[in-house]
Image (spheres, rainbow, N blue to C red):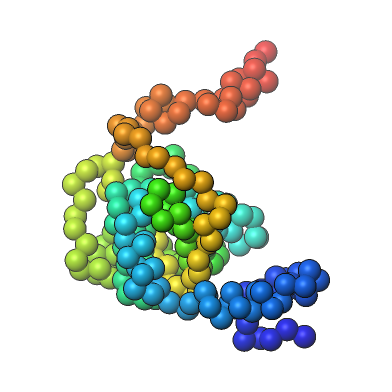
Length: 206
């Protein structure tokens, strides 16, 4: 049987046994997995301007979504809590909707320019109104840009966080761009880049 005190799932422990990686995994758990955001993790998140959010609904159907904003858009509320805004988008709100049914969430932050390192943050989450968020974080400034005014916030209660090694991360070079925050313009949002609307229109044509 598996050590119930080990981080991770029974499934990963089973694979570790099958593939003979228990010793390597145990060292990683001991050296790299934390149940809180260390000061260096907090500093890292505070300068990130993008992250990926993994959620699943009540039936286990998964979603992975990208989030971005100015550095500091993810708010750190100590070692065990962080929150991110849900800005105006396509109106679907799949990630936050999943959280309403299933609070488990996984976040991934990556630095592709400077340190070439990633950070996983796993925990449970709750959807907060802007008013609830201001009560939780009294230092939160009122956003003046309409495109960056959150409809709601997602509070994440940290359960585990750990490094994502750099060896397979590409080095990317940032390029200037004009962001159309809050735009509903089809062109600004990418149009029908993948051809879904065109294909559907063709299928529905008489």
